[in-house]
Length: 220
Image (cartoon, rainbow, N blue to C red; front, side, top):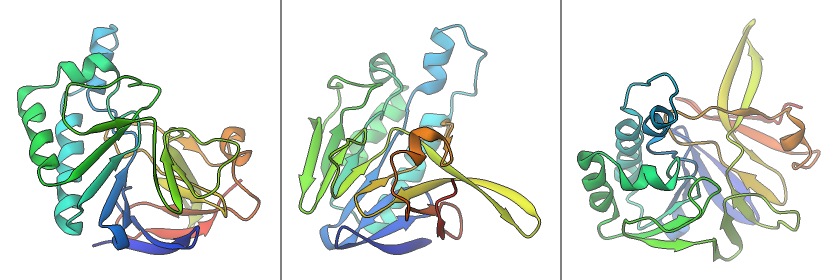
């Protein structure tokens, strides 16, 4: 399993190359910003059509991470669906896969700004969830301590071997951890953007996703 272990708020976590967060002490897998059904939402709004496979690809990668880790608890950290209608209009194949992934697991849907209400699928729907010393919510708050959140879709740009690389990334400091977007059709916000550089402390670090997760100082 391609991952990088790191310490946050006194616990040992693993940043998976896929963009998922693994907490082995609690058999807990956390993913953020799946944005399932994004291509369908864009089509409803008259945007140019995208291949309607992003939901299937995202769920397939999630299934692979669940198989690798054997997670007993899954937290979807908000914006799991691109909007409420997307949750209600999933292709039947995708709709059937979700309860198959949920079977035998505690499954928590954290509410996001794209999907603020409950969806017609199994699992528990919460604004936030706590497992000491961590708190899981969608958007970072000013009083954060041990906070795990998403929302910003952080990405990092680095120069490596004379070329520039940009990848989704985990960002963390001594107070908060922000996950990259897990969904296939999701853009990203550079860590140098003021929305992120203003949130993260001066010693914040980044873990780039990919085949070999890489730890670096957070670019500003």
